Length: 302
Image 1: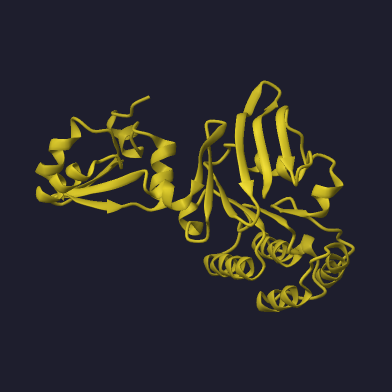
Image 2 (image 1 turned 90 degrees about the vertical axis):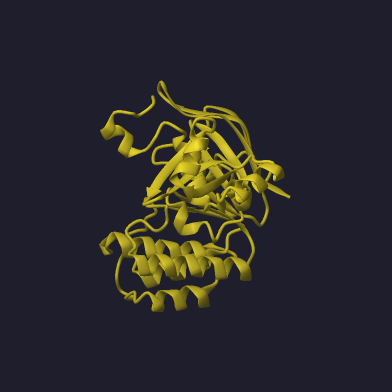
């Protein structure tokens, strides 16, 4: 069953185009990473899905409804982001009690265990929490709500390394125990790629890639070999990144070699090494114009 459908969706703010004719669909029960550089429109996509803002044009369906001002979408979804706030009249304990009344699938035992594990004080108020503790508390609400559509927009802002790892592990364990459609946005793919089933990569105002993590990884490959061997390929192949380590070079290229070409590379002493989803993501969004070193040596391609 399809939970989210975008068809030619455009969003503008004045003359600025944030999304341009974006099309994709997300199935029920899939944990999808919404990936992209800062400012590419990840939060805009998630707010449109949650019904918090309207698209300028195009058709959006969430649970087969138009999400903006939809009671059905509101009742079956939650958006956790850095603007999520609660009344300063309520203590954290009060918020958990109200959440139990508000969310039909609320998991009170899980919420309490996470609340205790992360050492929250019952009489504290969300407004008084540090940025990291506020993000952690909001994440507890998102996890324990067990909404059919759970949306986390950069949920680990302000969390330290240990807490981020704990959150990601909690998210995975709870998702396995209670499958549902989860969207998780980040521009740090290296932290979450092992959690994800699918990736929606937003770039240049549209969906540049949408599919399994393994498909993204398999788009590129690293070639590793002695400098003189690798240099023979540089003139005839599109290179996305390169690195020299002593007498060896490593280049990141498109993975479009035929079996015969792969055999020939191995025969010549050049290794083909799989890349991480994060390396593939960087290659897709950076292209072949070069990295920061090229800015300083004057060889950056516009």
